[in-house]
View 1 (cartoon, rainbow, N blue to C red):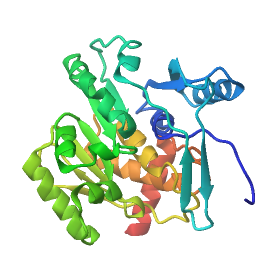
View 2 (view 1 turned 90 degrees about the vertical axis):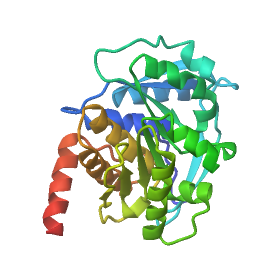
View 3 (view 1 turned 180 degrees about the horizontal axis):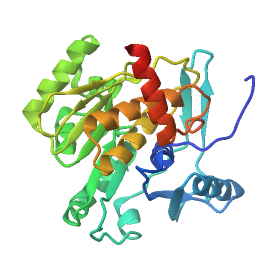
Length: 292
């Protein structure tokens, strides 16, 4: 390696930091339910999250009582290999530490794909309290990567983020991207999801399929020099959530999310570039001028 750096990461943490980083007028109060240890690395991570506007909720300790870690190997072309040390939080971990009550302002429980199966029993309770529930497919267990489970999942979730690689695996799509997008649209029209489904396409942007069944919304990614794509999908979801929870249109949420996700890839580290609203707005405007 030419160099080795230490940085915060993990899909949920990346998403939380991106959501908190947008700021006014789309500011959110962000809590991250996680497991940490009693080591110096855990203290460092909690302190760094706090600086970035994320309140960590350490709901239990990791099995070895130290911070879970991962090694991300970045190639010269921006591709990466991730060697992770995952941990799982069960449904009882969250509900035992969180009083699910109605909120006067919009509230949302976001679930990582890693924890979807263990959290299904709690989704209805959050809905009953008036909360929205969103999900990012990152880490979805192999047992859940079937058409039947996916249909059940989007039937419960208000906002689902899934990437093109995952949707191809679940449904066996082998066609070109434009045809695959149409296949996804037809599939969703048959199963009729509860909420909106966002299909992320990496460097090609994203497609939003509204819950209303209206026309799909396509947004491009920015043409950038990609350094490290780690966490780009997490950043997209976090930024999208910040706009969505404030009542912005799906097109606005997706457009700014695509801008933020693109900027994330221009530096090393999943949280190396945290874009606030002013940056997102200025970059989006500059991109629109260049396109015209």
